[in-house]
Length: 511
Image 1 (cartoon, rainbow, N blue to C red):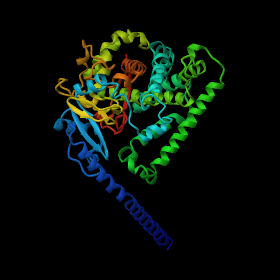
Image 2 (cartoon, one colour; image 1 turned 180 degrees about the vertical axis):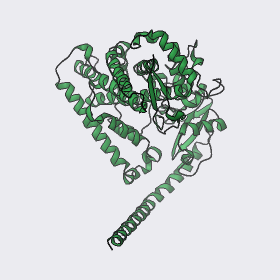
Image 3 (cartoon, rainbow, N blue to C red; image 1 turned 90 degrees about the vertical axis):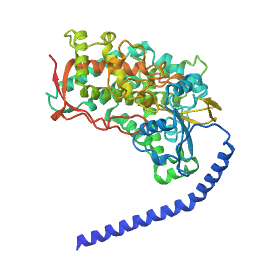
Image 4 (cartoon, rainbow, N blue to C red; image 1 turned 90 degrees about the horizontal axis):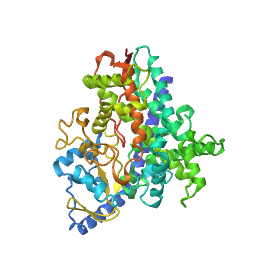
């Protein structure tokens, strides 16, 4: 009888949920259909006015939703396929928002070099704007004097070669800790991806914030940010329907994340303000920013929320992309035993039986650098880079690009273009030996960190971690897969593309 009563209660609850869903749908249709109709009429009117413009070719689209129905997991792959049909510049419509997608070297060069200033702006993205303290960071903020000042501070004071070298001890200590953990597995199966993620988190936490915050609170904030970035946001695709984000609950989650992030960085800054002054060589990045704020010799007032935005960028982007690149590199080496063996031989020659390979040795490891370059070619951390926005009308490859257009550069597709790269889908580090091509933004065939004014300023900071960690992993251990199963290379979806499944391995100390 109790079972029957529970079943009836469950059925009534289920019925109420259905009624509630039905009511919400009716409310949505009642309020949204007139707006959708008005949008369609205005869109037709504006399209007729712009018909004389020579816009890039565009795939067929559905009313209102545009090409959204064509975008599944792996947007960079879908857009690559469109480029093969429609050409190097394609006009797609994500909802009511038109977006230009560039998928060739010439198009990338025009956007990031020839017309770099025109395309130096960022479009408004609701989630990122909220989380980055109203767009006061470097990566996602609007182009202007504030951005220029923050970029200058980052390049000169936070990410210079001298500053990067000052954190060598931090890298060495965290690397030694990871190696000790691997040795402690006693050749049993363990999650190597998790250890690498912890290392990158700890290194960047200590360098940027001065310590590792207990309870992985910072990592939890990053995970929530990445999750919300991957969620569908009406404001980004249907600006007139931004109110729908309240109904879906997204806006509430964004507000909560923004509040939690703000409170966390308030605590971090307050701790730094109240701590005793230490040795200048032991300064972390928050210390440096607070010193610049106090000095104010440039005439630019560095507000507290700007400090938060800069540190947020350095932590989130640094942790996520550095870990991602290392994880893909390890996976590729496990899939390519010949390449692994060649890298181990280089490490053995350079290490000469010493306990560890040091950062002083890295200049003598060209194959290591080639392995990482090839990893970044095949697995661009952010395949579509960060979207740009034009600030005035401009011509690209003969096409008219209106002011305010969003632009995406499919760096992933360009880096796999068979017209540029021989055996473009194969992992071949040798292509970068005796080759001056680099990832610093001067070669538009290969821009894993972007290029021009909006290129990533933290390349050196990230790559020194990648190099020293990978060099010592292959120097210290032989890795094997449990059951000799192949490495699963399935991708996740998002601004940064990770591997979907962790690397599970056994590690045997090398003689």
